[in-house]
Length: 120
Length: 238
Image (cartoon, rainbow over all chains, first blue to last red; front, side, top):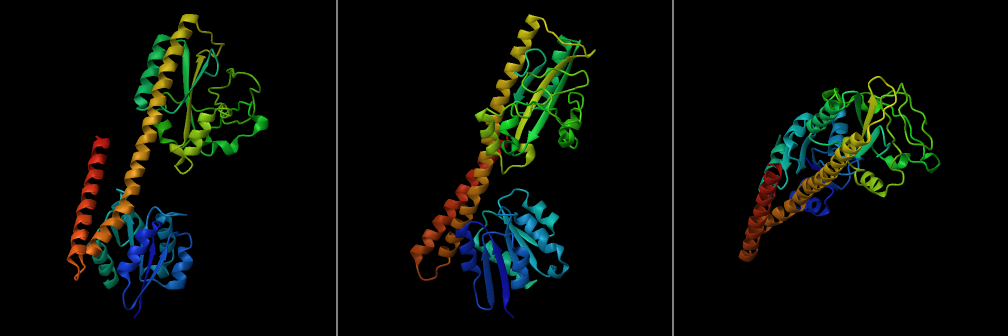
């Protein structure tokens, strides 16, 4: 079954890198540099996993994830936050996200975290 | 200075607040017949509220925006709530204490002050408590009668407030740069992540040893940069 990952990051270089790294057979990657349309994105692409930067226009990653979590139908979607924010762990807990990556994260850590949440 | 006799205004809250409290106590000790009111107001998007037709008005401030301010609660001994009514009152003149007034906040005092606009513009993206803060020292007689200082007392008060203003200016500059440094450190970590990821990709190249070596160098460099950022943060915080 095709897996779908939505990536939200306002730095285009990092966004493209994430897309390149995660692209593979049986997997659809959709990238966005803004997050205000996240609800319609989720409705359209039915993702298995969302990677969300916290500091992203227009509404910010935190609010975007809150919007997704408001709909119980989205409970199966895994959410991984990434940010340079020192309080990322606490924010992750508060939002009920499934995991986080503290910037700067490396390739292995990135792949490992994503794969583990896709398997779950 | 807003009014030669009863009001002093300065920008930015002195921090630590203990210093402000100490100053208030010392002033009260020196002039026991004087009451001191310290009001602060945070204005987000101040420039939008300014209207050329009314800029000479000095309005009575509402305390609605201040009611939930934890700072005010913690320092309730020096902060005194202002009356709630909001209307133009001291049109075209220096503010004078009304018998029923505890404080007057001239929200529009900086209408022609470019520095204030600049400060307001700089903090558009920051939370309200980070935005333009103005404080007002307001003196009145405890018996609510007209307050007139002796000239020597007035000179001393002028010096005290002048020093406080200088302190606040320095503090505002330091706070601004501290915020910029924090943002810089935060922002730098995103491109650093890209460099780290590229290093990781190159390091995995099975066919080209030179690329693998370049990848390792990139990873080592990005680790050093991250370590430098962490050291820098520790130093700033200490």
